[in-house]
Image (cartoon, one colour):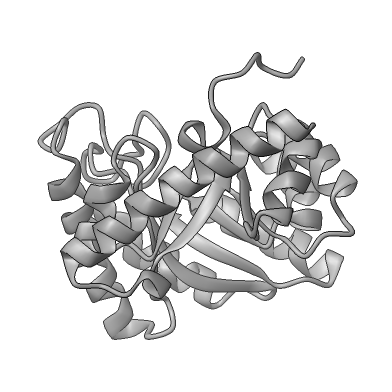
Length: 239
């Protein structure tokens, strides 16, 4: 465990240095960017070490991994983000532990989450996942709604009991006009964020950037970066 703590502390320090440098280069304060560590496939023991090292925001993309991990760490002061594609049959479980769901991409999901949140007596933060590679009216290959669907989803979330519209999320697309152009993709997301905030001023969260492209996300203006491998390393998958 001591070796693992040393490894995570070293990796975390390297990521922190990257964020600090990216913020400085962009003329931003370090406090403007929140690090979310994506702990998928890694055990609850790593979550505990990360919390000891000062990380509060954790993310998961599969309910079957997230639910038991969140339960095992229920005594810790954590903010859990669900970042994976979410099926409606998993909504009740996710609503019991997630503080923020970053992958809202259809009205049916909004309705199901609202029902589950009210039943659980909780308020869930919601990010609309924007697919920058999706055709008008479609969804992306990695989840997310086409940009023309942002307004409808924002209105649905804003009017749904138990839900709070927090902002937008994207994953750098692998195809389409933004493939290989991460910063341009994230800058486009910021434009959509600006439009969203004109109607919903409190929805100012922008989640973009991962281990390979966090600098581009910070340069574009992201408020949250989701980092997994750069902090946790490459280890055997659970199960």
